[in-house]
Length: 459
Image (cartoon, rainbow, N blue to C red; front, side):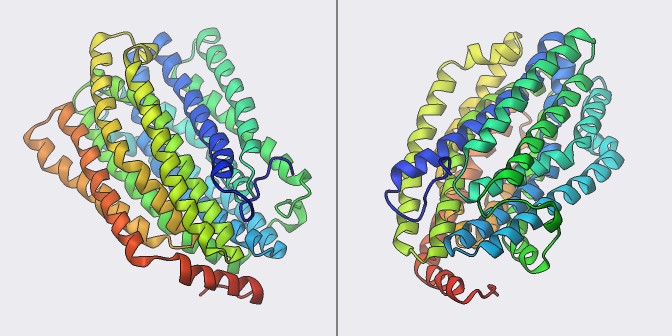
């Protein structure tokens, strides 16, 4: 109970920070532990192994993002039900979410094992990297059921204002991941198979910790093994919100796969640099993303409680806090970028190319933080298709067009990176205009309060 944040009463600014900071730390630590995979193989197995791990990031993101988006649907539905004080709906959504995560993970694993070589080939991975990339991807995909389960369980905890329990589970599993990386690579002489196996084991650990916590909690989100099944009415609501967000993530990742293919065509040095820089830039991303997720959950609960003013105040505070956090984090990372990149690889060419990527990405983040907060605001009301459409057209459409036109005329790393600030600036402006036009707080909050009183299911 002490880990929960009361979102529908009292002050907002301090509670948003209290909610977002553990969420940001969770994302940062998750990426830090993932970066340990890249760092270990980069230092002890060579830049080919490092490139193999990095080249798979867009593919893994493509497979994971659909279900992470669906877990966002679970977050919104549960948060709204909590705001409405509908414990029965909370329980039904929780049990449905757990089953969807497990079955979805099995489905993704099977497909991934079948199509792994073809997917890596599509990425135009150099011949010396290809077998390592396939090996890493296949082992990683074995762990998809527990990876997705952890994400859905985290969404369940977030929906009731608890971001600390997922953080604790991640710290335990992440430390285990780093230890196993060193044991498998240094002790057993493994390469990408060692870090992939360590990742699977650590994700299994974190998902089990959260599952046991859900079994023991006294809150409405408690899991009962006897109640684990899919409730189709709740599942339909989760899909209505989650699928557009998931498809957005998939298309976003597909665009990144095309970008990764362009990066791969420039050689292993650029591949290694891009991989190293990515593992730094996402630290700043998780800070602004945490406020976007906070906006979704706070708006979701206040939407259910019928408190329109708190929904609007949440957006304003998330924009302010996210903007400050993004500026500070990007500045610190870029200031120490050379030293940080050297952790992954000491090649001067790799470090120089990595700094090039960071420069362009951080310019893009000046627009991205606003887009994250506004998209989170709309999703809190259950408006998921519109922000997804904005991102698909503004980000993915621009990036694909850029790679197939501008990059072909000027095939350089700088040309690839220029598409990030251009696409994110356009998307932020479009999302702002859409948010102003829709103005969802009045009509949607009234609807949410009415549903809470009648127990009706939204159409």
